[in-house]
Length: 357
Ligand code: SF4
Image 1 (cartoon, helix red, strand yellow):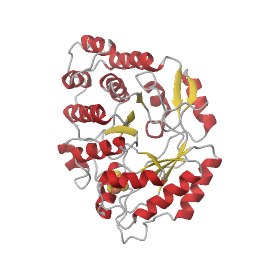
Image 2 (cartoon, helix red, strand yellow):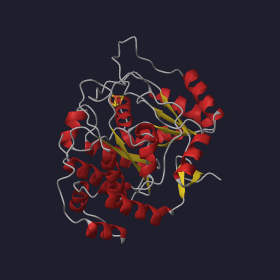
Image 3 (cartoon, rainbow, N blue to C red):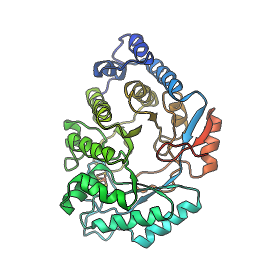
Image 4 (cartoon, helix red, strand yellow):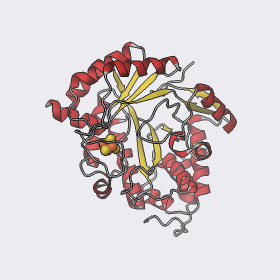
């Protein structure tokens, strides 16, 4: 364990003041915040900034279904259990009919979007994706699909440049892209987490292509393994730099690793440490409009506190999620009740962050 939370006693008040006065924080200032034990001040400043941007009373939610279309994957991330050897009889790839059945079920339950994500399966043709996207959008559902590594590998397999692939996918109905697969974007942590995945430069470049193609989305961080404070700072700085260049990140979502495999060491991220991340991210990521907390991973109590530390959105309802054990809200009523009880006026949004009347 590398993060030593109770060690630095630097007075952070001038940094918090600087940020809440509308000035950009430097990476060094972020490092100071993420090394400080004064997490309540950071969370309070994050909440002040969230109020300045979005008002005090409203918090948003959205309703989508995750469809994990295949669990075949040749990337082999050290933390992931959602993968299967290509020859294994435990592997699956959903047929178009199965995808359509799940789409219609989601629509019936009140979802307006499908989150289409899977392993990196080298045996799937481009037509598998275009047929699925056309079908999903024909049912009036927004298609959010394909993390940067899926986009990158599919382009390689098809012999296409990424922008050319994105035009084809967009014409078929792709509407936005998830921020998945970033975990921690530093050279050192890429080696620990997933040496065969994209480098941080490739991840950012692929996101830049998506944004320029008119495909916005989210970005995230997944922490709670062997990362250092420097890794966290570097990661958030790359995201902010990329946003300056391409501007398509609608939201930032801080996640923590969940235990999936026996071989990957994770640590318990303390609640206050998570809230410090939410607040610091709200202050540092001045060019990303929204901060989401994930009930699915964090549970309700911590997600509720996150809404008072800088976050303005709870993301879910998630109807299905095979990759991680879900603690998420399962119904529209549950989402509205959760936000109301937390002290907010719930507003439904689309995946593009437009408020639903
Ligand atoms: S995290 Fe994604 S890319 Fe990595 S092994 Fe799992 S499914 Fe494959």
